[in-house]
Image (cartoon, rainbow, N blue to C red; front, top):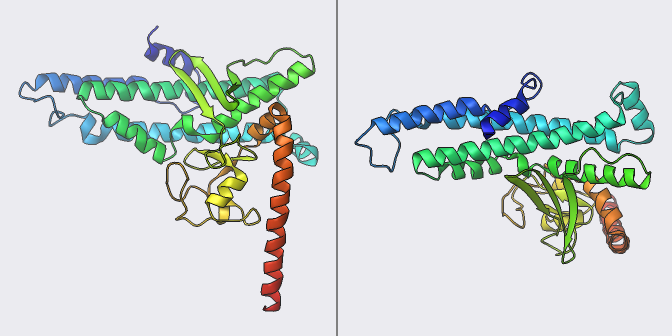
Length: 320
């Protein structure tokens, strides 16, 4: 089955609930572009025909708008789902009272699976349509657009909520195994260790496999208390604070706009950083001994930073 038909079947009945990449419409735009291209015999093969509807601004603006809607919807739904899963005590009771926890547990897991599927199939759609664009135009503008989408944080495979959903499914699966309940509804995600280097992987379609490296590029160890910057790179929270020239007390939100990601060197990536709570739970269970050692080490450093912070506050208060 061709992907276009497969994608249409997947989105059938979901149009009013979920935004999507209009794969069929974009293919029609490219088909018209190809016809225009072939009709211009004088065309030298290096640029598009003068009246190409694609280059006139139809294709990329449409795709950009659709990608923004898809990733926005995905992030919002994933955030709500994981907030329910991580809620505890009085907060969980309040959510139940407001009607947010009426779903059965199985439906809760199924929604997480559906969100991961939604992310991956739309990622495939974007990749295929950009590849088709480059093939028709003998260009690399499709790849350049993909890089632009990443810088605008609308590349769904770089969303930190996708990483959190993957960890969520593994956590649920482990909980079910321990409680001898029925197997998880979703087996596509796994935590792997290659030469003691951890990574998250997920595969739903033959053409897409996600591998997320869980090694902090600053301390070169498994990420501890992980955070994802808006550029998509994952670090230990304390390592990220050090890179951003802020203390644990101030937090990453206090980082100056000029501070750069240690990997991609982009600025302004700290203010919108996200704590990866599901991933933290997963790693604490899977690397228990390492997690306890790191917890003890970081506790000493945290106490030192808190002490220095309050000493400086007291000196400022008394005017010393």
